[in-house]
Image (cartoon, rainbow, N blue to C red; front, side, top):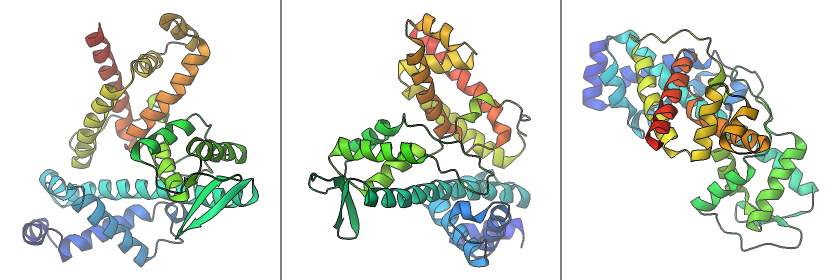
Amino acid sequence: MTYQAILDECERDQIGPLFWDLLVKVAGRIARGRPPEAYGEAAWSEEAIRDLAQDVALLRLIEESQLEYVLELAIDMDSLRRLLSHQVRRTLSRRRTITVVDRLLTRIGRMVSDADYRVTDVGREKFISLGGGGREPTNLSETELRRGALLIDSIPRLASRPSAERESKVYNGSDLSELVRRLVTEFNGILIHDVRKVLEITLTGWLPTILYDHKEEPADESNPEIELERSEMKTMIKSFVADLEPEHRDVLLGKMQEISDDDLATRLGRSRPWVADRKKEVLEKAGNVVSDLPPELRTEAAGLLLDELTAEEVLDD
Protein backbone atom coordinates (compact mmCIF):
# COMPACT_ATOMS: atom_id res chain seq x y z
CA MET A 1 0.00 0.00 0.00
CA THR A 2 1.47 3.35 -1.06
CA TYR A 3 0.28 6.90 -0.57
CA GLN A 4 -0.04 7.44 -4.33
CA ALA A 5 -2.07 4.25 -4.71
CA ILE A 6 -4.53 5.49 -2.08
CA LEU A 7 -4.83 8.87 -3.81
CA ASP A 8 -5.50 7.20 -7.15
CA GLU A 9 -8.13 4.98 -5.53
CA CYS A 10 -9.87 7.95 -3.89
CA GLU A 11 -10.06 9.76 -7.21
CA ARG A 12 -11.88 6.75 -8.68
CA ASP A 13 -13.97 5.45 -5.78
CA GLN A 14 -13.79 7.97 -2.90
CA ILE A 15 -13.36 5.24 -0.27
CA GLY A 16 -12.01 2.00 -1.67
CA PRO A 17 -10.32 -1.10 -0.16
CA LEU A 18 -6.89 0.51 0.35
CA PHE A 19 -8.28 3.58 2.10
CA TRP A 20 -10.66 1.43 4.14
CA ASP A 21 -7.84 -0.83 5.36
CA LEU A 22 -5.84 2.20 6.47
CA LEU A 23 -8.85 3.72 8.23
CA VAL A 24 -9.55 0.49 10.13
CA LYS A 25 -5.92 0.33 11.30
CA VAL A 26 -5.97 3.96 12.45
CA ALA A 27 -9.32 3.47 14.22
CA GLY A 28 -7.96 0.42 16.04
CA ARG A 29 -4.84 2.24 17.19
CA ILE A 30 -6.80 5.19 18.57
CA ALA A 31 -9.66 3.20 20.11
CA ARG A 32 -7.53 0.61 21.90
CA GLY A 33 -5.95 3.37 23.97
CA ARG A 34 -9.35 4.31 25.41
CA PRO A 35 -11.74 2.54 27.81
CA PRO A 36 -14.37 0.80 25.64
CA GLU A 37 -17.14 1.16 28.25
CA ALA A 38 -17.03 4.95 27.89
CA TYR A 39 -17.96 4.59 24.22
CA GLY A 40 -20.70 2.01 24.48
CA GLU A 41 -18.50 -1.03 23.76
CA ALA A 42 -17.85 -4.08 25.93
CA ALA A 43 -14.41 -4.47 24.33
CA TRP A 44 -12.53 -3.17 21.30
CA SER A 45 -13.10 -6.28 19.22
CA GLU A 46 -12.37 -6.39 15.49
CA GLU A 47 -16.08 -5.93 14.83
CA ALA A 48 -16.25 -2.90 17.15
CA ILE A 49 -13.24 -1.35 15.39
CA ARG A 50 -14.83 -1.88 11.98
CA ASP A 51 -18.08 -0.31 13.24
CA LEU A 52 -16.10 2.69 14.45
CA ALA A 53 -14.30 2.99 11.11
CA GLN A 54 -17.65 2.84 9.32
CA ASP A 55 -19.00 5.66 11.48
CA VAL A 56 -15.93 7.75 10.63
CA ALA A 57 -16.34 7.05 6.92
CA LEU A 58 -20.08 7.73 6.75
CA LEU A 59 -20.62 10.43 9.38
CA ARG A 60 -17.40 12.42 9.12
CA LEU A 61 -15.75 11.80 5.77
CA ILE A 62 -18.85 11.62 3.57
CA GLU A 63 -21.80 13.29 5.32
CA GLU A 64 -19.67 16.14 6.72
CA SER A 65 -17.52 16.34 3.55
CA GLN A 66 -14.24 15.85 5.41
CA LEU A 67 -12.72 13.41 2.90
CA GLU A 68 -11.83 16.10 0.37
CA TYR A 69 -10.33 18.25 3.12
CA VAL A 70 -8.24 15.36 4.44
CA LEU A 71 -6.89 14.51 0.99
CA GLU A 72 -6.12 18.16 0.28
CA LEU A 73 -4.02 18.55 3.45
CA ALA A 74 -2.24 15.19 3.38
CA ILE A 75 1.23 15.19 1.82
CA ASP A 76 2.34 11.64 2.54
CA MET A 77 1.25 8.46 4.30
CA ASP A 78 2.21 9.71 7.76
CA SER A 79 0.24 12.93 7.42
CA LEU A 80 -2.75 10.99 6.07
CA ARG A 81 -2.66 8.73 9.13
CA ARG A 82 -2.57 11.77 11.43
CA LEU A 83 -5.49 13.40 9.65
CA LEU A 84 -7.54 10.23 9.88
CA SER A 85 -6.65 9.98 13.57
CA HIS A 86 -8.27 13.38 14.03
CA GLN A 87 -11.46 12.15 12.35
CA VAL A 88 -11.53 9.05 14.56
CA ARG A 89 -11.16 11.13 17.73
CA ARG A 90 -14.00 13.42 16.68
CA THR A 91 -16.24 10.43 16.08
CA LEU A 92 -15.33 8.93 19.45
CA SER A 93 -16.09 12.23 21.15
CA ARG A 94 -19.59 12.19 19.70
CA ARG A 95 -20.08 8.58 20.82
CA ARG A 96 -19.04 9.44 24.35
CA THR A 97 -21.70 12.15 24.61
CA ILE A 98 -24.37 9.74 23.39
CA THR A 99 -23.25 7.08 25.89
CA VAL A 100 -23.52 9.58 28.76
CA VAL A 101 -27.05 10.49 27.71
CA ASP A 102 -28.07 6.83 27.42
CA ARG A 103 -27.01 6.23 31.00
CA LEU A 104 -28.85 9.29 32.20
CA LEU A 105 -32.02 8.15 30.43
CA THR A 106 -31.75 4.78 32.16
CA ARG A 107 -31.56 6.53 35.53
CA ILE A 108 -34.46 8.82 34.60
CA GLY A 109 -36.54 5.79 33.59
CA ARG A 110 -36.06 4.23 37.02
CA MET A 111 -36.66 7.56 38.73
CA VAL A 112 -40.01 8.36 37.11
CA SER A 113 -41.34 4.85 37.69
CA ASP A 114 -40.89 5.33 41.44
CA ALA A 115 -41.92 8.98 41.73
CA ASP A 116 -45.15 10.96 41.35
CA TYR A 117 -45.13 10.82 37.57
CA ARG A 118 -47.32 9.13 35.01
CA VAL A 119 -45.47 7.25 32.24
CA THR A 120 -47.61 6.62 29.17
CA ASP A 121 -46.65 4.38 26.25
CA VAL A 122 -46.93 6.20 22.93
CA GLY A 123 -46.07 3.59 20.31
CA ARG A 124 -42.45 2.76 21.00
CA GLU A 125 -42.03 5.99 22.95
CA LYS A 126 -42.80 6.94 26.53
CA PHE A 127 -44.38 10.18 27.66
CA ILE A 128 -43.63 11.50 31.16
CA SER A 129 -46.23 13.72 32.80
CA LEU A 130 -47.28 14.69 36.29
CA GLY A 131 -49.68 12.38 38.06
CA GLY A 132 -52.65 14.60 37.29
CA GLY A 133 -52.26 14.29 33.54
CA GLY A 134 -50.55 16.33 30.86
CA ARG A 135 -50.77 17.68 27.34
CA GLU A 136 -51.14 15.69 24.16
CA PRO A 137 -47.88 13.72 23.73
CA THR A 138 -46.27 15.46 20.75
CA ASN A 139 -42.65 16.25 19.87
CA LEU A 140 -41.14 19.52 21.05
CA SER A 141 -40.07 22.05 18.42
CA GLU A 142 -36.42 23.03 17.97
CA THR A 143 -37.12 26.28 19.81
CA GLU A 144 -38.69 24.40 22.71
CA LEU A 145 -35.77 21.95 22.85
CA ARG A 146 -33.32 24.81 23.19
CA ARG A 147 -35.54 26.43 25.79
CA GLY A 148 -35.45 23.18 27.71
CA ALA A 149 -31.65 23.09 27.48
CA LEU A 150 -31.44 26.62 28.89
CA LEU A 151 -33.91 25.68 31.62
CA ILE A 152 -31.66 22.90 32.97
CA ASP A 153 -28.34 24.60 32.24
CA SER A 154 -28.00 25.98 35.78
CA ILE A 155 -28.30 22.55 37.43
CA PRO A 156 -24.87 21.58 38.84
CA ARG A 157 -22.89 18.86 37.06
CA LEU A 158 -20.30 16.51 38.42
CA ALA A 159 -16.73 16.64 37.14
CA SER A 160 -15.60 14.44 34.27
CA ARG A 161 -12.19 13.48 32.85
CA PRO A 162 -11.77 12.29 29.24
CA SER A 163 -9.26 9.63 30.38
CA ALA A 164 -11.47 8.23 33.12
CA GLU A 165 -12.29 4.54 32.84
CA ARG A 166 -15.83 5.19 34.06
CA GLU A 167 -17.85 8.10 32.76
CA SER A 168 -19.07 10.73 35.21
CA LYS A 169 -22.66 10.36 36.39
CA VAL A 170 -22.99 14.04 35.36
CA TYR A 171 -25.77 14.71 37.91
CA ASN A 172 -26.25 13.42 41.42
CA GLY A 173 -29.62 11.93 42.29
CA SER A 174 -31.32 15.05 43.65
CA ASP A 175 -30.10 17.24 40.79
CA LEU A 176 -31.24 14.73 38.17
CA SER A 177 -34.64 14.66 39.88
CA GLU A 178 -34.77 18.45 39.69
CA LEU A 179 -33.87 18.29 35.99
CA VAL A 180 -36.81 15.97 35.26
CA ARG A 181 -39.16 18.09 37.35
CA ARG A 182 -38.24 21.25 35.44
CA LEU A 183 -38.74 19.71 32.02
CA VAL A 184 -42.00 17.96 32.86
CA THR A 185 -43.41 21.07 34.52
CA GLU A 186 -42.28 23.51 31.81
CA PHE A 187 -43.79 21.54 28.93
CA ASN A 188 -46.68 19.91 30.84
CA GLY A 189 -45.17 16.53 30.00
CA ILE A 190 -42.33 15.43 27.73
CA LEU A 191 -41.41 12.47 25.53
CA ILE A 192 -38.28 10.52 26.49
CA HIS A 193 -37.02 11.16 22.95
CA ASP A 194 -37.17 14.91 23.64
CA VAL A 195 -35.43 14.51 27.00
CA ARG A 196 -32.60 12.88 25.04
CA LYS A 197 -32.41 15.80 22.62
CA VAL A 198 -32.38 18.36 25.45
CA LEU A 199 -29.58 16.48 27.23
CA GLU A 200 -27.54 16.18 24.04
CA ILE A 201 -27.79 19.94 23.51
CA THR A 202 -26.85 20.63 27.12
CA LEU A 203 -24.05 18.12 27.60
CA THR A 204 -22.06 18.36 24.39
CA GLY A 205 -18.63 19.31 25.71
CA TRP A 206 -19.65 20.48 29.18
CA LEU A 207 -16.14 20.85 30.60
CA PRO A 208 -14.73 24.38 30.29
CA THR A 209 -11.26 23.55 31.71
CA ILE A 210 -9.62 24.83 28.53
CA LEU A 211 -9.73 28.42 29.75
CA TYR A 212 -7.52 27.76 32.73
CA ASP A 213 -5.11 25.15 31.39
CA HIS A 214 -2.09 26.86 29.86
CA LYS A 215 0.66 24.28 30.43
CA GLU A 216 0.64 22.60 27.02
CA GLU A 217 3.43 23.07 24.51
CA PRO A 218 2.68 25.12 21.38
CA ALA A 219 1.32 23.09 18.50
CA ASP A 220 3.61 21.88 15.72
CA GLU A 221 2.60 23.94 12.70
CA SER A 222 4.06 21.36 10.31
CA ASN A 223 1.55 18.72 11.43
CA PRO A 224 -1.32 18.52 8.90
CA GLU A 225 -3.65 17.08 11.52
CA ILE A 226 -3.02 20.08 13.76
CA GLU A 227 -3.55 22.42 10.82
CA LEU A 228 -6.97 20.86 10.27
CA GLU A 229 -7.82 21.28 13.96
CA ARG A 230 -6.50 24.86 13.92
CA SER A 231 -8.60 25.86 10.92
CA GLU A 232 -11.78 24.50 12.51
CA MET A 233 -10.85 26.06 15.85
CA LYS A 234 -10.50 29.57 14.41
CA THR A 235 -13.87 29.39 12.68
CA MET A 236 -15.63 28.06 15.79
CA ILE A 237 -14.15 30.67 18.12
CA LYS A 238 -14.97 33.59 15.82
CA SER A 239 -18.56 32.39 15.51
CA PHE A 240 -18.82 31.73 19.25
CA VAL A 241 -17.71 35.24 20.22
CA ALA A 242 -19.92 36.89 17.59
CA ASP A 243 -22.98 35.07 18.96
CA LEU A 244 -22.34 35.81 22.65
CA GLU A 245 -24.76 38.00 24.56
CA PRO A 246 -23.02 41.24 25.67
CA GLU A 247 -23.27 40.27 29.35
CA HIS A 248 -21.62 36.90 28.73
CA ARG A 249 -18.91 38.49 26.60
CA ASP A 250 -18.10 41.07 29.29
CA VAL A 251 -17.87 38.44 32.03
CA LEU A 252 -15.77 36.05 29.96
CA LEU A 253 -13.35 38.78 28.96
CA GLY A 254 -13.03 39.87 32.57
CA LYS A 255 -12.33 36.36 33.82
CA MET A 256 -9.77 35.72 31.08
CA GLN A 257 -8.06 38.93 32.20
CA GLU A 258 -8.04 37.42 35.72
CA ILE A 259 -10.33 40.05 37.22
CA SER A 260 -11.94 38.89 40.46
CA ASP A 261 -15.70 38.41 40.69
CA ASP A 262 -15.95 41.31 43.17
CA ASP A 263 -14.02 43.73 40.95
CA LEU A 264 -15.89 42.59 37.87
CA ALA A 265 -19.23 43.12 39.62
CA THR A 266 -18.19 46.67 40.50
CA ARG A 267 -17.01 47.38 36.96
CA LEU A 268 -20.24 46.10 35.42
CA GLY A 269 -22.54 47.61 38.04
CA ARG A 270 -23.88 44.17 38.99
CA SER A 271 -23.98 42.00 42.10
CA ARG A 272 -21.36 39.34 42.77
CA PRO A 273 -23.95 36.50 42.55
CA TRP A 274 -25.03 37.84 39.15
CA VAL A 275 -21.42 37.70 37.93
CA ALA A 276 -20.99 34.19 39.35
CA ASP A 277 -24.11 32.99 37.51
CA ARG A 278 -23.06 34.56 34.20
CA LYS A 279 -19.54 33.16 34.63
CA LYS A 280 -20.87 29.63 35.05
CA GLU A 281 -23.10 29.99 32.01
CA VAL A 282 -20.45 31.37 29.68
CA LEU A 283 -17.70 28.98 30.77
CA GLU A 284 -19.97 26.05 29.95
CA LYS A 285 -20.78 27.62 26.58
CA ALA A 286 -17.07 28.07 25.88
CA GLY A 287 -16.47 24.46 26.87
CA ASN A 288 -18.88 23.37 24.13
CA VAL A 289 -16.65 25.07 21.57
CA VAL A 290 -13.23 23.82 22.64
CA SER A 291 -13.81 20.50 24.40
CA ASP A 292 -12.71 18.42 21.40
CA LEU A 293 -9.43 20.25 20.82
CA PRO A 294 -6.18 18.34 21.35
CA PRO A 295 -4.12 19.50 24.38
CA GLU A 296 -1.43 21.12 22.23
CA LEU A 297 -3.94 23.63 20.78
CA ARG A 298 -5.53 24.70 24.04
CA THR A 299 -3.14 27.52 24.87
CA GLU A 300 -3.56 28.86 21.36
CA ALA A 301 -7.35 28.56 21.63
CA ALA A 302 -7.39 30.55 24.87
CA GLY A 303 -5.22 33.25 23.27
CA LEU A 304 -7.42 33.42 20.18
CA LEU A 305 -10.54 33.61 22.33
CA LEU A 306 -9.05 36.51 24.30
CA ASP A 307 -8.10 38.30 21.05
CA GLU A 308 -11.61 37.91 19.65
CA LEU A 309 -13.22 39.14 22.88
CA THR A 310 -10.92 42.17 22.95
CA ALA A 311 -11.66 42.95 19.31
CA GLU A 312 -15.40 42.84 19.97
CA GLU A 313 -14.96 45.19 22.92
CA VAL A 314 -13.11 47.69 20.71
CA LEU A 315 -15.86 47.51 18.08
CA ASP A 316 -18.51 48.19 20.72
CA ASP A 317 -16.62 51.25 21.91
